[in-house]
Image (cartoon, rainbow, N blue to C red; front, side):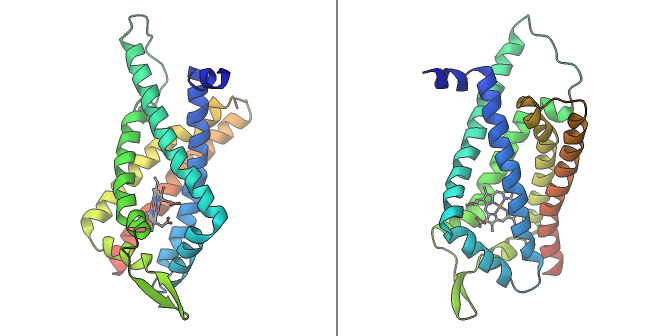
Length: 223
Ligand code: HEM
């Protein structure tokens, strides 16, 4: 089938990486904005109400299934590209690429570390919520899953705080190449727009991980 042939071609693989990557870039922004409610100092009321909405609204629930699929696709395709590049490098005709940043030549390693982070992260919060292992809390006469309490408890442990901060540095490095690379793979190469995209990529890969990292540090310091 032509579509399968295209998707498994090197161009198709890059297209999948960039489209799933862009979706994950948008997810990270939304996830961060939602999570910043953890810092409201209201005992997690706003955050718990928000989390209930995000996990029960049918449209958002459907988008979540797309998210899980895109994460898996991004990981699997990333591994396939990494293995293909590795065997190409062993070929004696391979030419060492010039002008590459440290992050761009270590995307797979960074990606594997992020996958480990994600597995631990999802286990800690998302999975516990999905299996109904989190006790409820009463807010305004209605019952909500007290997700805030679980996050708050996790960030009283200095090891988790360090683990999150270090993971955010890794995510920042992955994004520092991934952001602009996603646009480049889509063919958006332009005298005027390419520097703009590069600038946005740098700002995004610093600000988003920094915003995430502030959450555990702040919650640890405030108790
Ligand atoms: C301090 C940083 C973070 C905190 C406090 C946090 C917190 C949470 C919580 C409480 C949940 C479960 C409730 C929900 O689905 O919204 C969750 C889900 C999730 N988190 Fe995070 N998160 C953080 C950083 C990240 C990062 C950096 C990534 C990606 C690299 C990530 C990826 C996810 C994913 C994929 C889900 C499942 C979302 C869904 O079911 O729709 N999180 N996070």
